[in-house]
Amino acid sequence: MGLLHKIQNKAEEARAREKIRPLLESRMMRDILLEIGQRGNEALDPQSVPLALRERAARLASESGLAGLKQSTVDQVQLNESGIVLVCGEEKTAFLYADYNYEDIEDTDCLPAVAEYLVQHMRGYYNITRSFYTVAKSNGHTEEKTREVLVSRHHEETPFTPHPVRKQRLF
Image 1 (cartoon, one colour):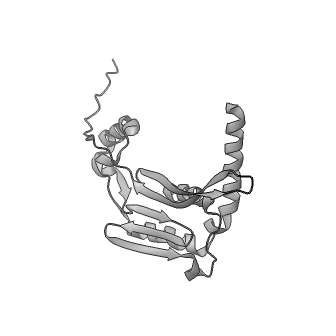
Image 2: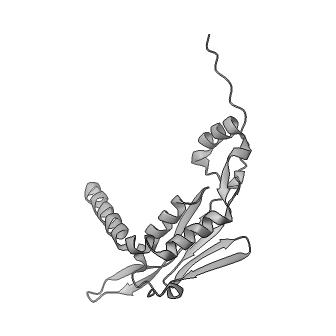
């Protein structure tokens, strides 16, 4: 049963990637990525490093210093059926599908794949969450549909204080 579930998940991911290809290759996505790039980077907030990745981040910080670790200035990305909104501090920049002469997205279940694509182009650690609504099907079952996807910067409560790596002795 586990193998069948994995195969179904891979097939769904492939369908989602095929479905979002026109959006990823669109002028709108180019503008979004340009906006993310123009916003620039800032020093990595130590609290944003997930616990599981702290060892690697500590090693990188000891090699290049904390100044070498960067994160995108984008705090949140909100994706829904009508557009994509970048949140940087208090400033919100909306990219609406209608502004680019596109129809609103009817099948919002592909939005998590778009969110993953955007996270790949941002520096730092981000969490992807989505909200659902239920739809009644004709056979009496209900199905969950994605309402909105929120990409937000990861934040840990435990402090991150990397220490210099001890040098190994060769002889």
